[in-house]
Image (tube, rainbow, N blue to C red; front, side):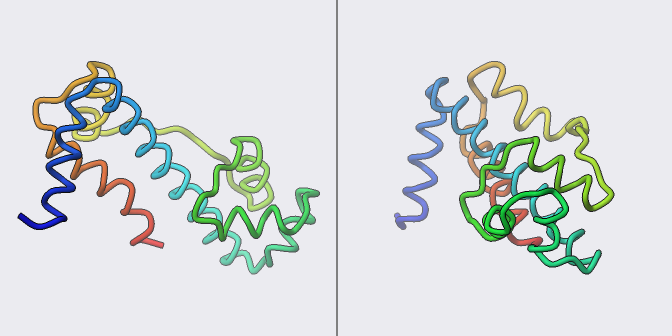
Length: 136
């Protein structure tokens, strides 16, 4: 058994605990969502030809705030900050419903606190957490 296989087996086992499952699903979705929004805003900033300092001046924050937003691996911006950045780039933050597959993979286990296939859920959540980093 490889250490990678052991990791996935352990994670699948941990996902059988309803409290752990809920926390892991919420954190995975949070990370994926923030990464996707921040990456899209940074792409829009670059497409607009704005430097990070120019964007910071536009929303009246310190340039370091924008540098951290776009460079930090552990970025956890407020919705207000994201909305201000989006507005300065001619955009807005919106919500969209999950498709049926995502609902079955994310919403149902989150609400129920359990899943019939913990290994599949673990792989799906891992793909969510790494998808936006690969696309960036």
